[in-house]
Image (cartoon, rainbow, N blue to C red; front, top):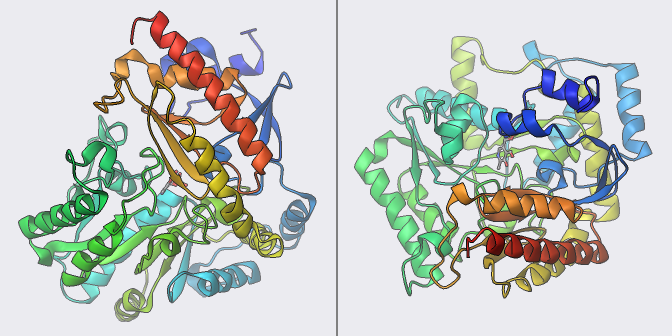
Length: 459
Ligand code: PLP
């Protein structure tokens, strides 16, 4: 790196999330310069298909179109900041809250705006406490999520997250957050067990955890419809039906994290619709604004809202909110993005091309390195395996996942390799031709990685 190059300045000054800092200091950043549709370009002009829509968010592609930019510009000039504290409101916030309630997959009563998925889930935990305190049962406080869940990185939402990197050395999870079985039959199913029987066992595990802790202490269960950052894990048939029956039996609130699945990712507007979920609260973000500006929302139903309202009324204040929550420019941009979804039937497009992605990923299943392919709609995963028959993963120390990432990069594909799983969540506007190009390149990167594994003596 030349001393004053952008790369050198990055290494000097910026700390990067989800990055090995030692390797980063040696190798420097990839500087992403501009975007066009499903592609981004680095500073040398090399183009990449962005297989993860950035971080599962740029549904409409990487350069916002003129009308979205115009809305942001106009809103900045008209009212560049205002907040919802102390009963203030602005029209973009009012319009967006109304639009979200109107499109919610189940009846919802209120929207509370946040800036990120982490904040929305963190806020949900606080509301659950407030709700149970309002009902005079402060002991009903514990929260259950799942191993391999991803719900964010604040102290509370990282506790919900069920991944070792998010807990280790951060002294997490915090007290009162428990994790139950990950619904991934490939790894956690027993020999010869059907997916439905595995789903029954997951629900029994949940029931057993609730009984062990005491049902009167369990306040809520959090779940992503498809687990994203845990490795694109699609629940087996009947899983959520059985889980929801357990929750109902013990008066446990159900919070659905639609941060990835919301706004068309699974072939419907909401993951809730794809899997028949009846949540009390919904967290959403990312594709709500196509990732163009930060905005997130927590929706809550009347069952949750009414006691909170009464309690806050009694004590004189609902003491929670973020300076930038429901920022007028973010709200205006999100509204324009929702308008584009509707005008162009973007969710129907995603539903129409999703089967192409799934079919092409399934076509990789015969590759010697591929253990499992999975997905629904426009989200998918390809899991590498050291031993297909035994479903044996590689030792993380062997670095096969990162090597696959480098080979994908060299072939012009950017995506996340999560452990041994290559994740796909391209912009919703991707065409079938672009899907083909992407998966053709993935197949080449698999061959490259196989050759590398053999050269390293790993196979
Ligand atoms: N929930 C899910 C399902 C996510 O995938 C993410 C981020 O990837 C989050 C929550 C956290 O969102 P944020 O990074 O905006 O805090």
